[in-house]
Image (cartoon, rainbow, N blue to C red; front, side):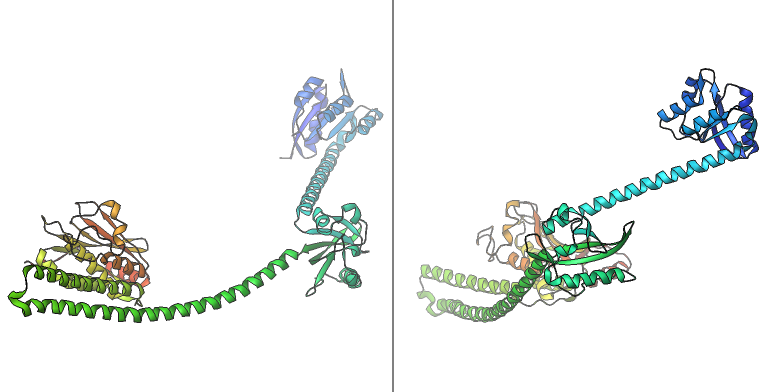
Length: 537
């Protein structure tokens, strides 16, 4: 199989066309050809995919010169070879008009070589066009980048003359292109630096490899208005038809130096602020120490008179006996009751203060142990109400055992306190894992809470019921919120009036508690619901 070749033959004699094809095959080609003999047929078969056109010089009503003209009109670059009779001068005219070669029909032995040479020339032309197009594209890309660069760029020849500049150069130095091109680059250098600049330029061109100039130096540019600007300069050698040049990058660092100065001022201000912060922090620490002392003294001084009020209030009826009038007895009961409530309030305030300010101890603890201690503290109320307490299996967590025990004690205590009188209290301690958090909860079947009060109940002294209905100071849930927030979590309630309350709080799953979870999950499975025996009254 020879070299494939798509050929259009313009010939009115089929035998001559067959002869052309024969010579091509004999020369190593595999021609795929079609023969046409009129202008309309020729136009219909012109195709950019053709490799070659072989044309007889003269046909009835059509000739090779007209065929060449039509080929040019179509803008097609297809090699065109003329095959003539013995009068070669007619073919020469075709070559002047653009034919690649001209052959005499009775000397077609050199046709294959003529075709190969023509195809090589076509390939060389195509490659030259491709390289020229690539060069134009590269030059256009360079021009766009050169113009759009955010820094001043110029080319300078070995004599120090400016050859090319971009628009940023005009903006930086205040000159127009016409004022710069062809002038010495020294016009952009302060007078005191020009000798050194000339020496540096000579050294740059003499160096075997491009090297950085001006390293460690303070460099300045001279603007048209006579002002100087701090600059950084980068040089790259480029080789052109006009000889070696430097591609010079000039960066105006005025803003950068201002930024550096601003940063130094900010750092100095931050240092002063840090020192002030340390002073304020130390003052705050001393105030906290004083507040702790005041809290202790105030609580002791407040509780001592209250204890005496309660004690002497209890003794007075015994001392007076029947002498104490009934109305006075009721007044005395009011006094002692108020003193007792005041004592509870002071104790709760101290507890709230400690929950929010005392140092927190974070260690790995069993949350089940915290719940057990809380249940033990309220066992008298459990026995009185006959409450049924259940719970999910609780994990180990990183936290403060005192605060977490107090948290459970308050939540369980509230569930017992606000039980529905007509039904037995049922309280369930829940646990679930959501991504990187534990969600714990205490769910009851008590009287419930209206949705509009769900946020208010965690504020200190916020009571939804009178003292005659339910005891307490309204501080318990505020203590719960402090305890949870100290552990980086949050607490909320889901409830409707008459449908019980579900208090939930979140704790982060840290590395140790996550390890504990894996340890728990690796044990044989069992029901997560555990019944805590109720204490029957």
